[in-house]
Structures are given as structure tokens and as C-alpha cells.
Image 1 (cartoon, rainbow, N blue to C red):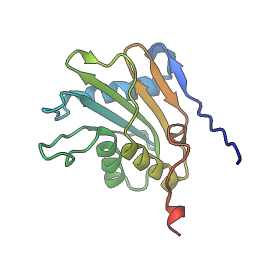
Image 2: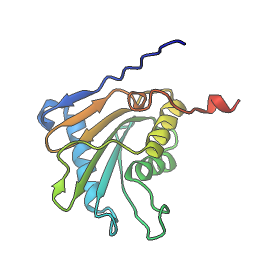
Image 3: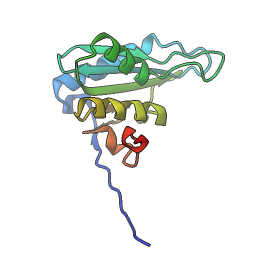
Length: 160
């Protein structure tokens, strides 16, 4: 038996002011996007904002459906929209903010496994790491790559 240790590096910030302005703006866009989420069932509104190489910011929010799991998460809405509208632009960063009936969550939430897999595919497609920023009222978590959240992952290379 061999032992393999896997380490992920995440950065934690106590306030938006600690981040570069471009990331502050990206998080604010994600927070704004959450306002228009369609979440009548869970009441859990999530917004995502994607920063493209051309400096465009594309937003998305979760879209629920009574016929679960027909809805879609904010991250995938934003990424799919960005890839459809700007197919030649690399995604540089994504910010995610979530709120419930009490307002924005205190601690950052991680994207679900499906969203992480889509984010990872976008990294692979562009051969560029995507910075991930997760907003919480008490702290903000940042990673330099989606791989920090999904170090053991499924890739198209496995299909060959």
C-alpha cells in the first residue's frame, strides 16, 4: 500500500477591502446577481459572476424548478452563458455569493460537485487556472484554481 497525501491551498480574507479592486467588484456583481435568482422552493439564492480575459463580467443565478433536478446552479448558468456569448474568451475568475432569508450567508459556501466539474472543464478548455472567490459575511475564501476544490477529478483524458 502506498499513501498519497493531497493538499489544497485556500486563502481566507476577513473583508472585501483586503482583495484587489477587480475581485471586490466581481464579488459585488455576484451579490447583485443573487437578488434575481429564482428560488421559490429553497429560498436559497445564489449569484455567480465570471470575469473574462477581456474584462467583461458575466453573471448568473440559480434557477429552480418544481421538477427537481431540472433547475440549474448559478455557477453553471454564468459559465455556460459566458462560453456561449464569448466563446473565445478565457475565464479568469468566478465569484459566488449566497443568501437565505436572513441575508448573505456568514461563511462562504462551496460550489456543488457538478459546478466544480464544469468549472474544471473550463480551466482545461482554456489551459488557464480560474481563480475562485467565495463570499461570506464573516470571511471570503479564494483559491488560485478550481483544482484546489477538486484535486482528484474526472477529465476527458480518462475517456481515451
